[in-house]
Length: 313
Image (tube, rainbow, N blue to C red; front, side, top):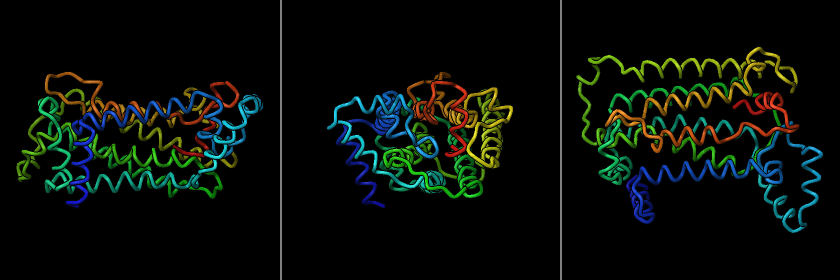
């Protein structure tokens, strides 16, 4: 563990950024990369589409055929670097494992926690999260990861679908980084924290933001679970006829965005009562929003509703 902590410390020192800025940079880079790949048809059809949507449309095929032979050949080769779509389950294993790991690190002031926390500069320490914010965010993120892990096993169907390996790596990096994003701006409070019996007492009423966002998180989680259960119940890959799919484009993915938006609101540092959009928890939401659930294969909004029946995100 000490070797890993030394590696983290050396990496942050080499970048010349503190830990908060490094995490922000990761989320921005990942979001920009995801959006960039999803826009050009030549990239979207090769690297983002999988499952029943893996066959390119006629228009995309013609577009691809018009490209230069060398460029097309390279893209086609890169597109063959795939992993089974069932690897989605690993995202939630990583999420739950990360939550448990960081809980132990934060409570014991472990070496990896200290390696990151001591690399947070004074400006970010002044705008610190409270211990209550860190605790609530940790509980909610753990619940989210555990629920999605349970759904991945209970709602799984045999499939030969594959996804691009970079999609898998980015997903793992996202969930591992999320485990850090929910506490890193509370490092100042955590460094001065020692667990006592007094911390188990409820002495203050929740803030208005927390009072609003926790029910928002729970409602969005329930909506997402219902969508996943309905998609699992479909006998074949088809346009869902559930009322919520008629009213909302890809509601299960919309619920995912609301879930991480509520986490961003709860975890935003409140040193001066403001909510900073540059916070890592906000960048976490930005990456969630920027990662498309699936491309439009015929240019219509309604077609997006079918994306979840194969990927169940």
